[in-house]
Length: 176
Image (cartoon, rainbow, N blue to C red; front, side, top):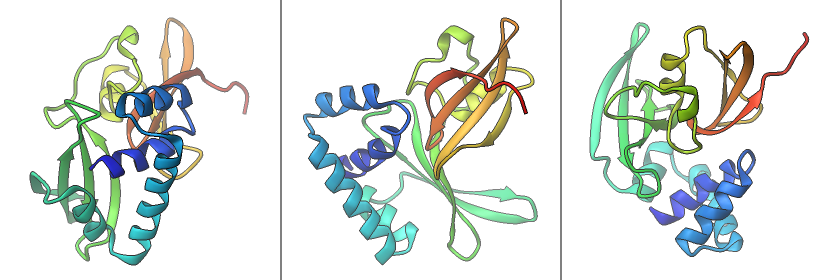
């Protein structure tokens, strides 16, 4: 599980390097260990199907379920991760076993947030979208990145997420 968390941190470093450095120190991990964990995870995903890779990295999923997605039904697997208490890492698989999505969710349901509650690594996409009327979820600039545009105090903001986990808040871009 530690190796998987380190692999997730590798991608999060793109958006929130200071927070990742703090997490590495708290875990007693080096940047080299983080790079190796990411490289190992990348190799594992290319050799195995994503479901098998996740099960190998995280063990059996404590939560298994099914969820409708349009006219299809997907399988839902969730794992709690020690570095993110109260959240779970969720993977959605289509009818043929293909991985449709993977990200952090709040298993207990959406938590209403205030603007002051937007603290890195404490909330997920669903929390932010539900808490700010008119918030718009858009594609992020890289794989496993999401953004949510929202307004507060008369200003436009862009919440940045990696694997669905809130990383930072930026001013929204202006212009076309």
